[in-house]
Length: 482
Image (cartoon, rainbow, N blue to C red; front, side, top):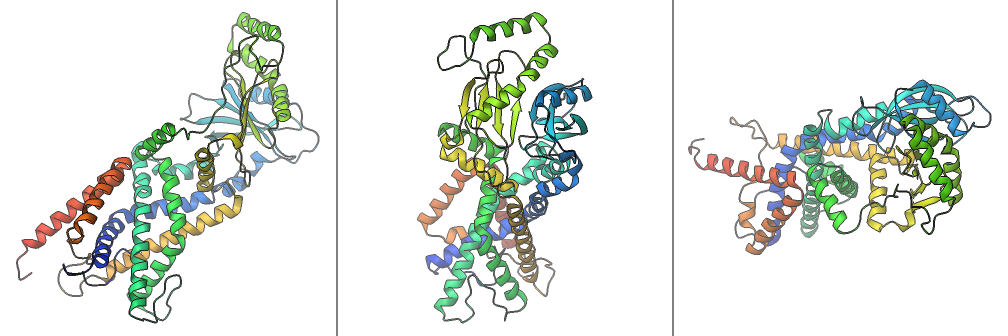
């Protein structure tokens, strides 16, 4: 919302509403001035990231789609073709072609890649011919262009130190938005109380010019996008380094974590497990005698189609990813991949030898917080509702950019026309001291609690207060003639 607003500071005798308004104006001003650049970079890179899924499909269409027709060959045969293309890498997972004309994605671990990165070979399912190779990132399977944009948005390609910028932006975004809403609504109420015909809350008064017109656009756009900004702030913090760690601890304490299937195979004779335990034991013995990871991998490849069939029979439909176990004592994992307009992502664990389902994680059984987290992540990434989701995020990013720019324009226009001062005037000091004692104590307690949970917000808030105190001391000792 507005970085500042042209109005006189309330006198010490002013009522609580005016004192509260002055406090929020001061806070909003400092946050807008100092955090604005971080928000601007996050908004610009976030707008680009919003359209990345669609951009990815266009850039890599030759990897993702083929023109050959005919029935798909067994997935095991497609995997073997990919292994022939990259015999130096270890098989990790496969995403079978979901629709006619799609490619199968076979993924390998590669020690030369970064965390969460895998090497993918794209295979024509009808001919088992590799059509290309790329690096993929994360559970979303992002391809290089989307990964590059994601790292730009998350860390400016500066690694972990660069993530401070995005966490600082997410930490302050919700507070700036809520403070702006308070200022804009209180301004509207004051104008209504005075009987002004220019009082507008949700629409722009186009009869105004200059600073007033800029303020109208700034405030009105802010009111319309506040809910979206709060959502971006909340979901962005879940990915952050410091606040994100606190959020993870809170979710664990409240049993809100995302359920995962167990890869451990049940022991022979355990109840609830189908299949022939003797055959399973013999399989393990053969693998142990062969004693090589290549032999174990070859055995797992032979089991892939059985595993896929078992997961389909269990009710796992749509596009899936099969996780290939690294040893003979673990189960396959089969999980539904996140797709537009698909609201559930279930997973099962399957014994490759017997085809028995050994563990399940059905999305309807997840805790509500885990469901909301999954939906929030997809919504933030622009994948939950496809192109509509991406366009909405792009519009939200554009709106945030225009608000930040208009905020700085208003700040610049408030600079004195005479004298040596070249920058805009901040609202007058003393806002916290002018609050009622109870309100001031509540502000300090809340700031301490929020600052502990969101560390970068707390640290930067202390820095703002320090700057404010220093500026006040300098102004107090300034010669009267200045």
